Image (cartoon, rainbow, N blue to C red):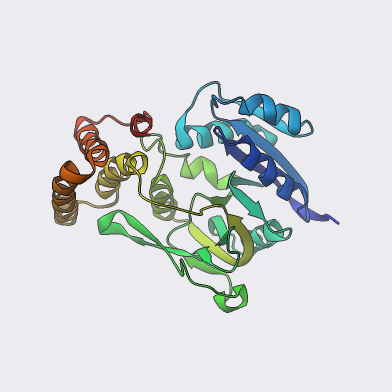
Length: 305
């Protein structure tokens, strides 16, 4: 039975060519013990008939189309603009390849209600194919490298062993509950990233604005992240966007050292990829060139699928 809460939440789920995952995600959200809860599905320019299937299968949910692929960052910003007029206390951005526990949202909201200086919160994320294996259990930033680390990733842990609510320096974009009143100060996603690593920049920006990030261990969801491997598609964004992050998060000598270190590593890998993985070589080289040309925003990673 859903419990009435004094706060209201709008959940936004972004879909791109994965309607079946989105439908399963929404079904799990509908089983949540949280009320009032409104769910908005944003179709981000799907090309596989997803929009029509979502409209058919989710007849009682609001399904909105962006009209074209805006990337993850543009899609999230579109969703912010669309749902802020609903004046909910909180906005949850949730990946469509997730399944949620029925009480996860109650725990996230209660955590935020008890921590008024927190602008955003996330919970524990287990792999869906093995619901005892951690994908994210808090996170921390490595500023000089433009990196973020998922704590306990790959470990098999009981949530009871993860401790209580605590501040972290990184929240994964897979699941973030935002305090609506803080979004005007924070701003939306940096659309230069298009996708990947944007959550690192966003976490750093939230902290730079004087807000806190909250990790709520008992707020549990499951992520369909089986078979996560490096690919030319991801490689393009990881190189272009990592260099962008290093510049945004550092300055002076630290920025110079970090950039030189990263470029040295990539150059060595380019030599190997040139001989053994030509598509990786092309993706990496294009990512480097686009960074130095200032060619952001666009989804050029799709050229390497």
